[in-house]
Image (cartoon, rainbow over all chains, first blue to last red; front, side):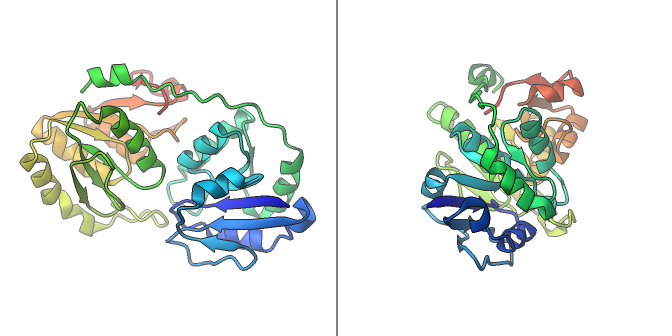
Length: 152
Length: 147
């Protein structure tokens, strides 16, 4: 049984959830169990997967997932790359600020993960995800706290 | 005092607070959400801009006085901003009061500055970037590494 986990963070990303609902994931992954973390701000509730807005089981769901489809929020993306998860990054272009585009470009440029910039092409991206071999992401943890403390 | 927002902003704030905890008395301000674990006192001021439309929430501007009082009454010495929009008020007040002020640009930015980053630059506040790619465009900002 393949486990697929979808996470959209705190901002509404209904177009992604709707598109996933319209895809027969079993035809891509075979027998699968799908779970979605949805936003408090979103209005769409997935019909074909278990979903929650907040759960203490979030980290467990991430850990157990074979594939994670995530918005391009940096917290999610770095954390998933650090864990070596197989992920599909979908920037949330419903946001006015388009902040998620830059990190999606970074991930794509370095081949750390597969990126889908258009939710209408999500099915193609999911099919590619099965075969995708990412570059290993090195946890930089490079923040210079000693230097930072000297600035305080 | 650490100013932050939701999601990734909070994750970055948590990482900063975890390292500073024990050596500093920490205070926090956020737009929406829980208090940082290590924070002694917390203030929630609402989102400055709607994430979908980008419209400025004028009501949030009324928090100017609230933030000012929070900073003064707690004798804040240093303000650390991690974005998003709600940090702009903190940056402005901190600048007016002449406090030590640092803006850490978001770890999601590689090509351009956030609005709070642009305001910090305009106010001549110290800006630290987390991704070396940003130094191509902003060579004067110190690259502090990624949280």
